[in-house]
Amino acid sequence: MQGRSIGEEGGISRRERRGRFRAYGPQPSASPAKRHRRPPTLLVALALALLVLTTGCNGETSPTTAPAGRPDAGAERETPPRVLTTEAVPPHDIEAEEGVEHQGTAPGETSVVPVEVKGVVTDVVISIVYDNTATRPDLTADWGFGCVIETGDHTLLFDTGASGSLLLANLATMQVDPVDIDIVVLSHDHHDHTGGMESFLRRNSAVTVFAPRSWVETRTKSIAESGATLHTVEAARSLCEGVLSTGELAGSPPEQALIAVTERGCVLVTGCAHAGIVSMVRAAQAQTGRNVLLVVGGFHMAGHSPAELAGVIQELETLGVERVCPAHCTGERAITAFAAAFGDGYIPAGVGTVIRFP
Ligand SMILES: [Zn+2]
Ligand SMILES: [Zn+2]
Image (cartoon, rainbow, N blue to C red; front, top):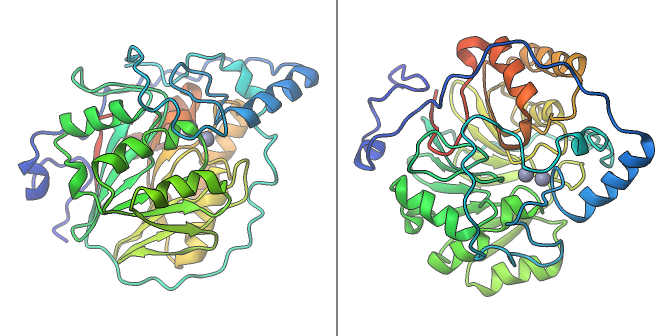
């Protein structure tokens, strides 16, 4: 390694060929978190929990969301793109999340065992291609998450966002050719992470797909029928040299995260962190025997109180996390708190954000 740090523009010829990227989005406000709103009553919370269980993370009821059990039904639906350049908040009521935040089935209770780490990657480049916010006017924001992870030997797509057409458009604008992607990792069974899958596979089915074991057979069947090589993941496992899955971690729904292992330490990429972001970092550390230095993705903390936020931040710092790129469902107040706590270690997320590690 040449001592390259996150955000530096030089040194990545692969990236340079693809044009100029903004490594950082707009600087966030460092103002104190807003006053925490009171959670709804238990009755409302239970009703909302049922709603979330039948829709997706944070009750994705956006126009691009298909009902549960209809994989990818909304992927090709054309809806006017929303460009949310400052608010990391979905169009539905954020209050809805507050009552259901901790209704999941025992997150963090997965038993974690060490996994053989097959090699390390020299460096890793993570490009966010689908998120609730965008860092450039020529990229489109939408509720969901997806990123491209380049290790040198492999190019992985982690989650596909909600809309296939939007995913492919953002990939094109960011000069990422879908054909260059050889591995697809799907974090969990929520439409805002999987909706673009079938469109992507129609563009490039010569990929190996790693989907959670808990998925319904009809959904994994459509992947296999595309011609892609399908692996269902239950326990932690190697995905390619230097890249692992945490395996399904307990949450609602169960979720796998991606670990890229470098000589310096690990990068953890999460979809929604339904298993709990601290639990997922702990799992990755226990599985690899190495510190997680950078965490990128949805942290699912919109319903956390200021005290809970502070507790999570402190735990991540204690675990040795140096940099965070909280995206997607993290929640505006949580993102503000992360920015204040991590300072230079905070990386604003949005479509167009490119992170180089180490
Ligand atoms: Zn999500
Ligand atoms: Zn989710």
